[in-house]
Length: 247
Image 1 (tube, rainbow, N blue to C red):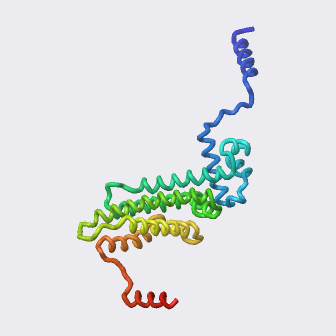
Image 2 (cartoon, one colour):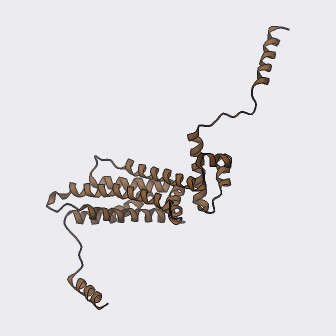
Image 3 (cartoon, rainbow, N blue to C red):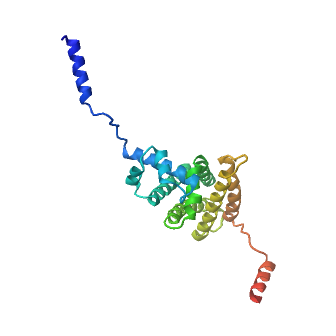
């Protein structure tokens, strides 16, 4: 037998001894990301209760036992989706805020970061804003933590804005009032994102949506920062007091 035939025989022998059907193992982080991506899609489309672990596993290209091995239960899987998407949204808002920019630009870019992210990830927003809120604890608690973090970011922006623009003799904006305004602004942003993502006609751009809210918010903040506060007329206060005393 010549050398060529000898090498061919050796290669064939090695191939025969090589384990068959072995698939290269996927890194856990990659596999888990695929599962979460699939879960977000199914939860957004079907809702938490109607979502099937079989469908999630099939969409992720994994077996259902493997999904349970990685993420324990349907409840834990849903909670993991909420946490991941909440962290991504917060990161998008923070990334949009340039700490060295003027106050109005910081708020503007923060709003743009919020609306750009929710528009680019409508399924994630559906899970956070619609699904998680309708199924009680512990999901509502997860979303509440997200909302509070957004409120904290916006409160600091409003306080910093008031401090930067308070050189005209106006009193600084109290923290409690700034927090109340931040709650209102975050609530308006959530509502606008739901309105924008739910439209079936022409969908406004993230810039247009952010500009709508910025015009609404900034006009009020500008008045507050310059000491121009709205107050009901005395006649209105008196009439309300009269009605209250009668009732």
